[in-house]
Length: 194
Image 1 (spheres, rainbow, N blue to C red):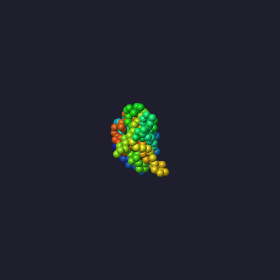
Image 2 (cartoon, rainbow, N blue to C red):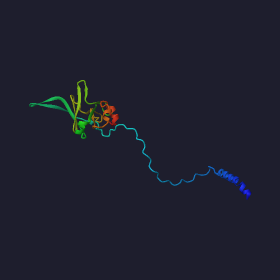
Image 3 (cartoon, helix red, strand yellow):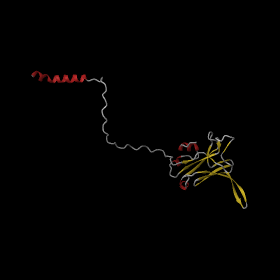
Image 4 (cartoon, rainbow, N blue to C red):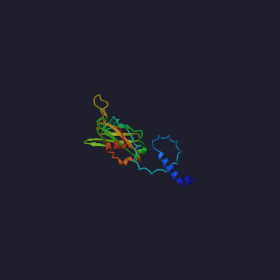
């Protein structure tokens, strides 16, 4: 008994060392245990940076064909040509509120859809003037030349002199950040499709 008590600590140390040496990493991975219960929700993260102004409320048309008519002034019994032509684009979402607090921009494509040459209205060059005026539900375009949409020959897909409007309601942040006279900038900023 004395022998066992005296050598017991040594035997326990050797047993422990042999037990550790017997463990190896060569064995196969055991199956995954069951999923634990859902933990409590964490605290909210920091606020992200302020995003760019949106354009969700901007209203725009497709490229429109517009036919112009001569305008006449009644002078007594006779009608006299006023020297102007006028055409109209329907704009059903153009409201009185937008007219008083928003902005209306009109663009003209002198070229075709495949070869565009776009300018904002009013357009003034040499002796040509093309302008616009907006009223509830309609945009009037007037000119001192016949600026009607047209095509050449039988190719009705290449139409010249088309018009498009962009309506920006009041309070839309995009209004001040865009150069409205640069159609390419407007197109990019508002993601307009031609």
